[in-house]
Length: 533
Image (cartoon, rainbow, N blue to C red):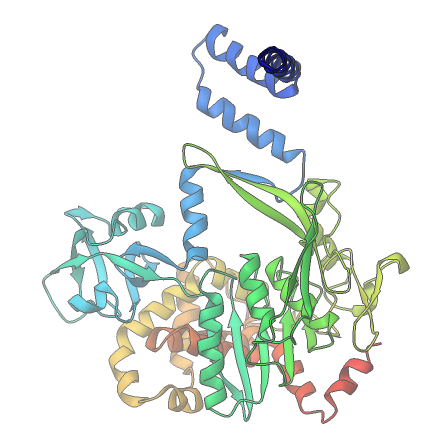
């Protein structure tokens, strides 16, 4: 018995050694070993000193460039900047600000945040941070933010210039966690119709959405316009949670599948708070990834009507791979598919062509006419309830197309915007009239109904443009005038109240919203979908 066990042990040991040698031999002959030896040789034998870290970073970037447009490398600083908006908070002093004439102008202190607690007001100008002058010295916005941000409970000393006060006011602000909201706006856009705009799918998005939805339902909302225009995506789980609010129990939301990632399916739990009301989803060419997951699920189950223009077409799933120095690889590990089986990822054989796709769409007339968009029959799919035809292979096609509106945009308007004349004039107005306007318009509703941009304000805008090198063009000015008035009013609403009020004003010019409201006037909602079979 002893000898049997002894020989069995020897045999097991032998096979272990053979397996280890085979594994070692496999590694020694692998591409990874080749790469490792090349890097070692360069670092130790090259004639001149080399930056080893930079070499490795560039090698990683070049490898990822061979894969797809969304497999990327980020250094530690980029990782931090990328994660903050998605995590839902960062640590700082809690202000919304803009740079006006090389000075940091406080638009609004965050409600309940550290700056508001010590008495910093909208309209204040931060001139110094810890005895370092930041105004009038051409300091970059990133450098200023780096000085203002810091660990929770740390303190920062500021000196502030306030309108009507001669001397600089000193403030010591104790930094704290500052929320970053992913909902831009939530309000009743019409009787019984609510409006919610989501700018990204972050860790707090579902919680924010539920709070907004409950608030609108208390105001009598029966129908909802969900605005995902310009929403470039975010967390997959956040998209699943939002789609769950609209779909019935066990209805498939999305599934993912890849070479080393077996099919994973995600179903609605049936716990959503808006499973029955009429739903409109707005998308455009910048709606991507998580936005397309929500939109695809709504469309494939015939749960709502999709309005706007063809979405971006990002159907790849990335997994973050953290590296020891805090940097990160975001590696594509799977594709996602809508409930009907559509992969809406657009082709990416050439990175250059991929990056020029939106320009190509515009040049081919797709932004102007639905008839310019063509999909092959091989990309046809059927929706689950009504068996309507939908397409994969390059974004979500809306049920109702809305062309991009170019009638109000002129070269003169673009120059006023791009050279900063519009914002400079705005800061002058808000600085001079903030108290007057807040006294005159006690509520936003009063402001929305009664406020008008005056001829004097428009003359000041034109004069500011001339000062900044924008050549006046009467014809283009008159063409852009309705948009200029609306933008100026919206910016004032933002600075007197918040982003919610900004969108309440600026949405008056949004053609997709107008179309959604027009469709919601139709009594037969299912008929709207059946027309698009």
